[in-house]
Image (cartoon, rainbow, N blue to C red; front, side, top):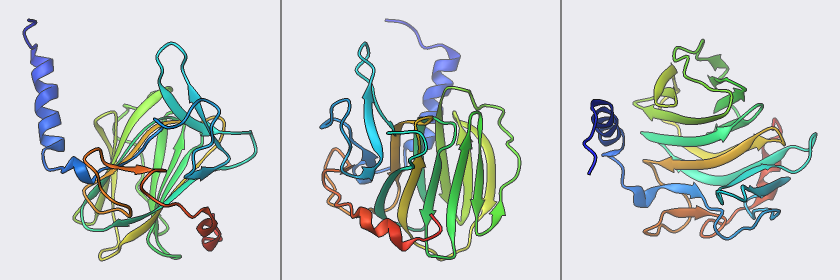
Length: 217
């Protein structure tokens, strides 16, 4: 058996500190198990499933350049919560919507992202950890402060308006964006919870017509 190196131990300690407070039964995530390459998941529009033939890994991307792909479902996020994203992104945008006047917005480009809320911007990246390929991204909301991490390195933060509940999650993407994972932890979501987590497209009912309620999108 291989001995753990100091870097292995450091990585394990980080993982314990980062995730020890989670009840992963309450985690909501995209599930592509029921879909084959070329399928359109039930929780979106103008999106399609792709698959690597060698590895079997699946992801979601837009169907056609110039046609905005959307993923949308209802949430009930308040207090402290986290959003986990694994993606190769060039123009993807993620919104956590509280109401018509207030939302958290992540605007991605090839090697970075803007964090915005209520008309304010979190400012410049402090991590220099973004890559031009797949990034692991975490948005942590704790005590009304949103912190953005890129590949486990702190990127930027900003204060949020207190006392809000975020009831909609909306993702915009096109053919330049590949979304591998999207998970929410630390707060309740609509749909029934199972031991495997609440799966988008299986236990959560999505009404894509609701997207028209937000005229700014």
